[in-house]
Amino acid sequence: MTRAVRRLHLFEFNERPECPAFIRDSVTETLGTGLRWGRMGDIVGPELARFCRDAGVRRILDLCSGTGEPVRLLVEWLARHGEPVPEFVLSDLFPHHAAFAAARAAHPGVITTEDEPVSATAVPATIAHDARVIINSLHHFRPEVVAQILGDAVAARRAVFVYEGFPRNLARLAPTSPTMLPALLANPLLARRQRAAKALLTYVVPVIPAVAMWDACVSVLRVHSEAELRALVAPFGAGYAWSYREVPYPLGGRGVFFTGIPTGAAA
Image 1 (cartoon, rainbow, N blue to C red):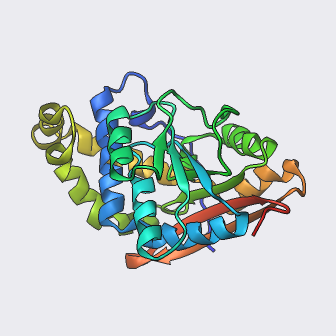
Image 2 (image 1 turned 180 degrees about the horizontal axis):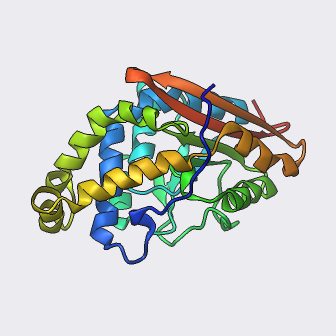
């Protein structure tokens, strides 16, 4: 188990309202591409398949979806390895409509989307789902908001699956560099929109690389530790089985998984 340093909730540029939308898009697009090139499915897929079996999951609401690339990777991994593929619903407080449309087109009937804003702290009861998934996003929220997010899921008796790409240790960020840095540099060529602006602030004036590097380091320092997560769910009582795991991946990386399954969920 990794010994965590004190959590620091420093600011991230891509969360600031004054940050231009195309810079925020660059960060989320880079993350999606880097996860694909880093074969995120091989890390998360086995854990998600086990979770779906244990919780009897058939329809998943993906919160804080960004570009939706993580879900696309998971759908592809599950299908390629002969695992049952649940239906996924993409959602975000700031939906990336073009990326959502591309995800639907890539996996019709498997990926659907909520095109209106969805808050992870108050999911509308009208969205049918068995489980809520949060991939590489829980660190964005302060502990009191994490408690609201998990509490909202518990109140609705929905299973919870959380993944973070590293524990709270800056050294664990290094294994992501061989894929994330090329993804960052390639993004202006791969982006669906505003390529010229992204190219200017990537290659000529390297604002986007500086923003991405700062936000990546801050993300590591914001990750919630096992002790902190368990303390946040302790008030919910004994109606859930909570589990924390760290799974190694190449070059010294460690993926963090935190899951909650309602007691008595169908296996």
